[in-house]
Image (tube, rainbow, N blue to C red):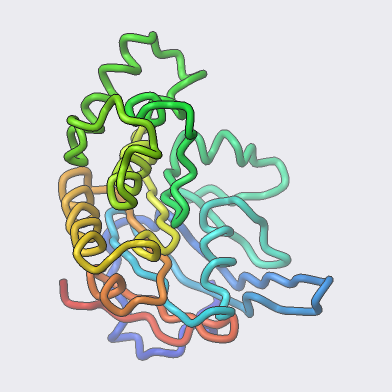
Length: 243
């Protein structure tokens, strides 16, 4: 595997925790319409159970990288592997995402006509669960994010921070091995943002899941165990935070 994309000293990169959950090897992403290379020979591994922040200014390539990590997009060249298996043209990306990956977006994307509890159940449909099983699991999840008293509320009846908590609960509906969060505190005030970071830390600790956040915020990045800094489509540094 190429090591040319990581410019930081070897001593600053994390020691392997296990076999990599995600391997990114010499990945490039080009957008031909604008003649733009969003990712430029990027290489790194992420191990099961890591809490990683991907940080960089607007236009650095971090959102493109998140899309590729979450299999929402494919690289122009290079390889991406999930749990030791190379993702290629034969990979059913919808199935991979639905079984193993959860997403938390800055804009929440809650369905406005469904209650909080119903929104959490949406990813469970088509998974062979009965209605009672979906409701029971949704109740467990809404309790885990401290929102049981808002179960019957519609999104418009919730604060911005409450909507984000419901979105996080929904992202856990299928017990993903990997949770990806795109600017998860971008629309939140400082107090609410801090509570969301505390929730992420709690979920990471309790569920032992792999958590990746994309952010331009130093505070959000500092909450992670490891920070990948992206600039001009390259990994500028890869360091542990000491957490």
